[in-house]
Length: 463
Image 1 (tube, rainbow, N blue to C red):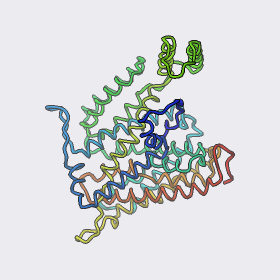
Image 2 (cartoon, rainbow, N blue to C red):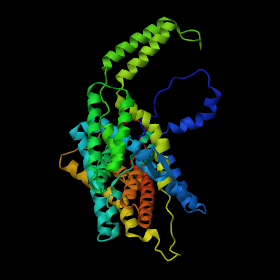
Image 3 (cartoon, one colour):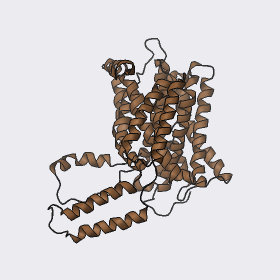
Image 4 (cartoon, rainbow, N blue to C red):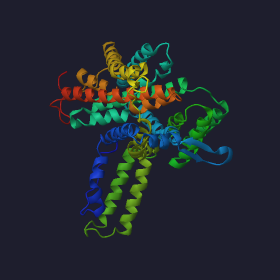
């Protein structure tokens, strides 16, 4: 989700006052780790707020403030927390769906041999945490949370990895990204199958019909994003009313977004050169004076050609990235990470003594790295997969620890698993937060040692 930050920009001869004032903010936003840093800040703010004398205002804002949208029988009235978790997070899952489709079409998941390693790693990283959690919570009311430690937070994990800059080989970033995307796909299936209590098949039927309509629109060659988003909003409503979690709609709508260009790259390159020649023929001297009519026509032609050579899938993905990284996920963290840590002085057991807490924490801290390493090693030994160029087992080990950062998806599943049970939900959240921080720190240290001395795209170090 950090992609798109390192886009080349033209150098301007002068800087406007607003650019001078907002320059530090813009530079921060371009950092690959910016989204992860903001997530950490919002999670920390939520913890401080929920354990401060003003904790009642935290509960009042997110849990008790109701927002009503619509009218009559079409009205939806929900606490602010549920609007964040159901509607805003549907946009996050829309982005996840776009990333999954892109990886399948042109990414690492397109090549079966290359995809085998992250797929095997993701399977191991989902199974072992679930087993550890289930073993610790067998026979108890907390068993329903077995899916919590199975998910990896792709934005957070890549943000931590980005702290090492060019020392991390691009192939290792691709491995972790592919692992997390397969992990997300597994988490989506778990949510759809195991965390759906009642199903309204009538609403699901309408949702299916609308998804078919989106496929027909795609085949008909409609490339504007607005029809997909408007129909997608109705699909989201149908999923919400059906009982299947509404965020699943985001992924399914994403799969209908066109992923092919209307202009091949060779034709675009030739046309772009022709337009640049026309622009240059009108003269390039004159400093900051206005462009001529002919030059303006060439610029508009380039803009139109750029829209046709870019796929709607890719353009929508780039449009969503900043909104998800700098608004949706931070707001989600602020609304969901506030855990009131009880000391047990009031006669209740502290949340960190709960089996749910230990199941989540050990699932993420032990199950994730062990599962990723074990299944990756087996896949390579059996000849099913191969290590990417420039990636050693020591670096896979570091990435495996980073996969233990559950955060967004883990908190999301915790809300589904323990809805209505504040005690178990707080224990699960504290386990997610604590384990994610430790996994991030340990993964960063291990990866820093494994990539010591490596800069840029130079030859890989020995394992």
